[in-house]
Structures are given as C-alpha cells and as structure tokens.
Length: 198
Image (cartoon, rainbow, N blue to C red; front, side, top):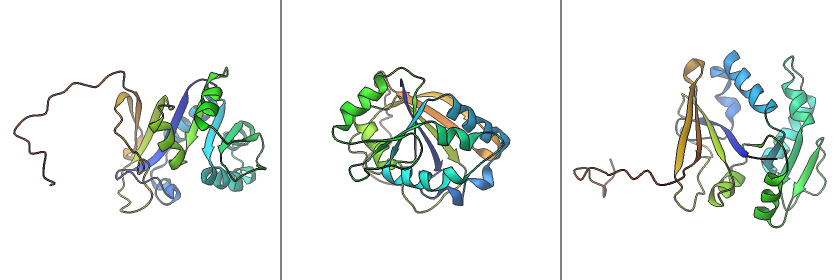
C-alpha cells in the first residue's frame, strides 16, 4: 500500500479529542477540498479500535454531494485490535499479533498509501517504531485546555523534518512532517538557561 500518512485535527495545545466541538467553527470549502483530495489519493485506512468503532457507527449512515462518505465506506480499512474479531463496516479487516511485521507487510503492498486518522495509541506506536512516513497536523486556532493529546505516550525523542506548510481559511494551518534524515545540528545559545521553566 506504500506510505503510511498520519493525518490529524489538533488544537494549538495539541488536543485531538472530540474535534466535533471545535472543528466546525473553522471549516471552509478549502479545508473540505483538502480533506477530500487526501482521502481520494490514498487506498486504505489504518485505525485503532476506538477510532474504528466511532467511524463505523457513523459513516455508513452518511451521504454527501462530494462523495466523501462513499469513499470512506468503500475503501479498505485495517483495524488494529486484539479484541475485535468480526468488524461489521464494509471492507474491514483486523490486524493482530506482531504489529510491526503486519504493518510492514501492508506497506509492501502496491498502492498509493494508507491514512491514519485519530487513533492516538496507534500513532504513538507508529512513531516509536518508525513506521509512519508522514505526519499531517491540521492545527485549528483554538486552545482546548484539556483533553487527550496526540503524542502523550511518546517514550523517546523523535526528530521530524518540516516538508510543507499550508494555510487554510480561518487561521487553520497544515504542517506536514516527514522523518528527519539526520539531526539538524543547531547550536543553542549559551545565554539561555536550560534548567528552569518559564
């Protein structure tokens, strides 16, 4: 299936939980077009169980003139779960066992790539095992103050390289990162104190 692309809605303070509370106020035709193009330029989705069940409960009942719902319902879905055995959503398969090997096998299949939306625990697993090729972080200009954050379980430092920045209406910005080929090699000025918090 080619590259694994993580795509997320985030607040300025990194919250990904309950985007329905803050995304609609900043939505635009350009944002819709960006997400529709993203969906159509990939062949499958890789999802954690909670996100999969949320999507599976809502998307089969939806329809829209742009065909977003049709694409969501029709494309292949792979759900990472040790408890789900019989996924009901159309074109869904369960991945269990050795996840690194299973995801590597998916990446080796021919295709245009796999999207990962939501699925915080899965995204952290992909980050720690260098399995994601790209991170598209759509930042909405709002501070949630509380809620689940995307990289809350990162166990070690990872350096990413900024590939692209795209501005959308209403202050929404998409930052696209890829794995860094090397450390940037910058030098921190000595006059900044590193042992205290602001």
